[in-house]
Image 1 (tube, one colour):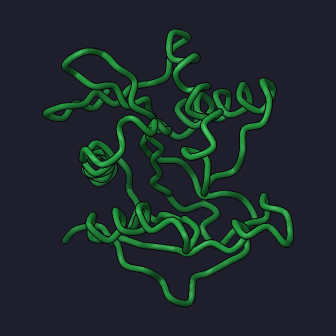
Image 2 (cartoon, rainbow, N blue to C red):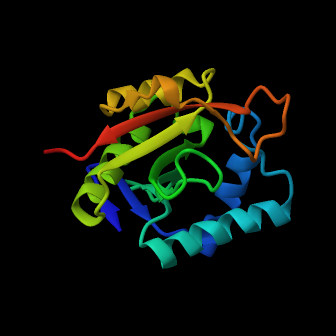
Amino acid sequence: MIETERLILRRWEDRDRPTLRAQCDDPEVMRYLLPVPDDAAFEAMLGRMSSWQESLGYTFWVMERRSDGVVLGICGLKGGAPDTPIENMVEIGWRLGRDHWGQGYAREAAQASLDWAWANIDAAEIVAITVQANAASWGLMERLGMVRDVGGEFDHPLVPEGDPLRRHILYRIARPA
């Protein structure tokens, strides 16, 4: 568990399912992300999050507001997707429910995740990916001190050819000296 001034980052629990599912069903939340179209895909996502925690010691943790226990979204770390340029690297990511956008929660959680990574993972750098159209996400990457790898664009193999979300941009941040 990671705690910040306003947040707790923790493993997901059964009680989080309805909120996480509602966020996955919100077209605005998922606008730049891979869709979670049905219950089987949603359960597979939760299973992946659990397996990352077990195998890697980190995952996309549930982001809970300390003051009232409201689940705001997810944020954390995972291994880079297979068959991409970030395979076997540590990737940071986040997703918040729409009601929680623009309040600094993603930055607070992402910074806490980076701090945790530097203290607990022997990685030379952390990476993040998104699509060019997702200015909010890559803007946060830049506010975190991440730098765009201009030559690092790639077509994500999990996104069908012809889909405007297929082309991804890559950001990196090196371990602090």
